[in-house]
Image: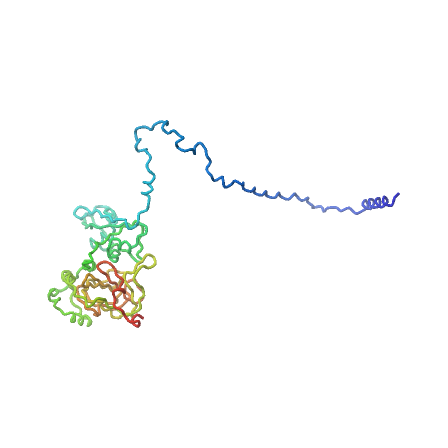
Amino acid sequence: MAPAALAAAALLLAGCFATPDYRPVGFVTPKDPPALPQRKPPPPADLAAWDLPVETAAAQPAAAVDVQELAPLPKVGQQALAPQPVAKPLAAAQPQPVQQVAATTAAAPAGGRYVVAKGDSLYGIARRFGLPIRAVIDANALQPPYALTIGQQLTIPQAQVHEVVAGDTVFNIARRYNIDRSELVRLNGIQPPYSIPLGQKLILPTPDSAAGAEATAVAYAPPPAAAPAAPTVASREATPPEADREAMNKGLRKPPRSKAETQAALANPPARAGSSFHWPVQGRVLSSFGAKKGGEHNDGINIAAPRGTPVRAAENGVVAYAGEELKGFGKLLLVKHAGGWVTAYAHNEELLVAAGDRVVQGQTIARVGSSGHVERPQLHFEVRRGTRAVNPETQLAPRTASAAN
């Protein structure tokens, strides 16, 4: 036998006698692995052409369809079903600017009087005539809790009413109708931060002419309190301004003037001392004139000053209002000047003059405080020409750098 054949036989016999390789008892034959996900087929080469319109019978020009051969519509309502031009509804849907919203006139009952009936409430009566509740309260001098009695006669004011729409603020409403913002706030009982919800109906005060800030001032004046008989208008007008200044600076108070006396004094304010107003107090300007965050607008400037600092009249004039009915302004003075000018002094701690008093430039008319909605002593000062607020810093005389700090 050849050597190669013997070697092959030896290998074969060795394999037969080798120790077998047994698998363990718990051996589990592995399953085939899960099939791999098939790859997403690539987009077709003409994918961009898929967005092109497909020409079908429905997409053919309208001329290919004979509309006249369709069955005619019934005669009844035929004109109503006629197609309308598309441009008209689109034009009607365009939003109108806020400035074009017009005020409506609240409908008042005959004679302007309403007799309270069973089941009436203040809210229901105001809603019936399209008025804010505050307008009815003010017209009838009602007091909390505003209870009504059957048969009670209420005065229903004839007023212009504005319904709040998107984008409205107290400032732009007052500017749109040329009315006083403070009076708008007071009439509608708007509280700081003076936000107004959509749909709220605001009563608009009667706009005043630029020639007569008298109407604005008198509107702020509280009802005259009962007082001893006051001297005649002639005797008051004969009092020299210097004597008035000395008396007021010494704290000598005069009896309250009647409404007629106040109106007579406002009708003839003294001539101005110069072409510019004087600073009522000296100090740093905390808030300047103009628009602020949140849609607010400062109609004047706020000047920091220590509590009790004398507040001096910016010009010769007549006190048109002295009181604190406008809570946001605290103790407030309004002074009317010649030429239709009005100055306002708010957040005072003490008022040293009364409505109808004649004041001269530089006279101490109040003392700085923090009344109203402020946290630190300061003076809010405004300059108005009629009902329009003017930036006071453009009308005030220049001051030194030391006085501004």
